[in-house]
Image (cartoon, rainbow, N blue to C red; front, side, top):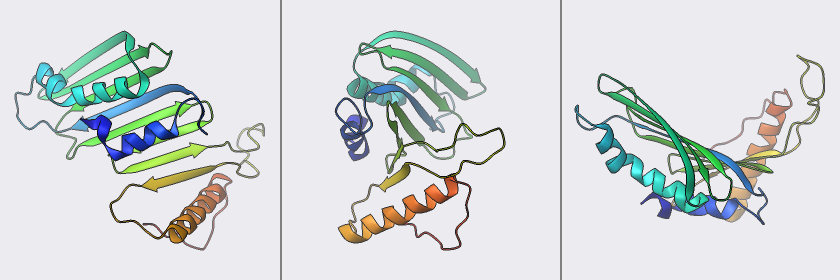
Length: 193
């Protein structure tokens, strides 16, 4: 079950009342993969693959009170889009696709909160975006004057870096992203890893 994955456990700790990100407003969940057999039916798609993500969003956001869905299939490709409202007022959209075009399984959950966005990608990366770009009231085509806020990316891994080097890496990465958001280029490269 996906609800026990470390990335989603960490996501739950980052969102909601009493957190830096604040209460949840909405979320978008995307899941795509290539079916393992050519005659993969919509029922099999939901009961064997999608059900885990449905369980996940119910665990994170609570019981669903309103649902609408659409389905499209072309050849052996299948897409299902679901919109939901939870008991607590949170709304969400879920996009599930099974098609050969998805050469590998892809999964992303983006949660929009009052003070930021938290995104989990492929169960291996958590991205925290908060703050805003100052100068958004300038005229059309004018770049913002400076960046306020930051983007923080956290990679989940079993190999732990020493705390000091991880914090230094996050600081360098955040600084570079702020420069980019402000429309500036830096000649110094930012390490990844």
